[in-house]
Image 1: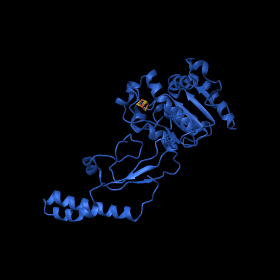
Image 2 (image 1 turned 180 degrees about the vertical axis):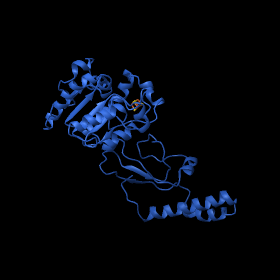
Image 3 (image 1 turned 45 degrees about the vertical axis):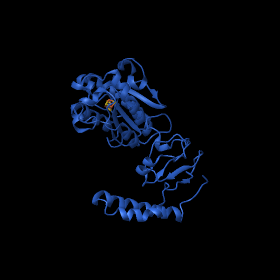
Image 4 (image 1 turned 45 degrees about the horizontal axis):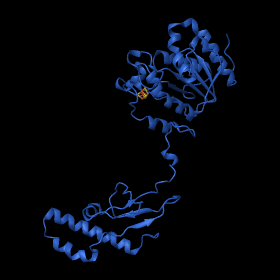
Length: 306
Ligand code: SF4
């Protein structure tokens, strides 16, 4: 069918269809009292199905989309323009405009998954994609997904291991005892918590604060990567074994990784000890502080006096 625009004939058909539905509703509700009214109108409508109108979808390279009177239906497989449904189907289908897009149009930017490779996503998009996540077994015991907190345009991002009990309760990373130490470390570096971004390798609390397992890390890792692609910081500080090993895809112990500049997705990365480990091993604070001072130097911040 040649390309057409909705005109007076189609507008009239719309009105008549509304009248028909209205009268049909009265017939269903109030019996057949109004059947005569329908019959009186029927000659105006005719016995044939309502006309279909084709429109061209902007930017589409395929055949025109079809605007018809049918309810939204599965594609008929008849080349995209067929409306050869039988009478029963037509009767059921009548009454709603349908717009079908061309089938070979390129997927829109909005349709692309924010965790798929490509242009950096927005942090909000990544969170929306995560949704009420059930991609791994940690979903069953969590109270809250602990996505991340801080500046979505942060120059400095801290990546930890996973939420603990307090984080699970509040839905915010690093708010327990280890979090308080991390806050002090951030402030000692000359930043505030609001300036930086803080997140974890896994977003749900492992039961009993056990270590995250490899399948859980694997399930959550695309979202961590998407977060970091979205923020695109100048420096990532990987806090502890799981963050460093996950981001660097290595099994090298944190004791050998820490203090050495590395790279993740083209972003400079510094592995150091996790604050929880520092609480248990205060003697290691000096080494961790040396790592953080190296990060400070990257930002032109003066090292603290001994
Ligand atoms: S840990 Fe990550 S992948 Fe697993 S359920 Fe939570 S958000 Fe989903």
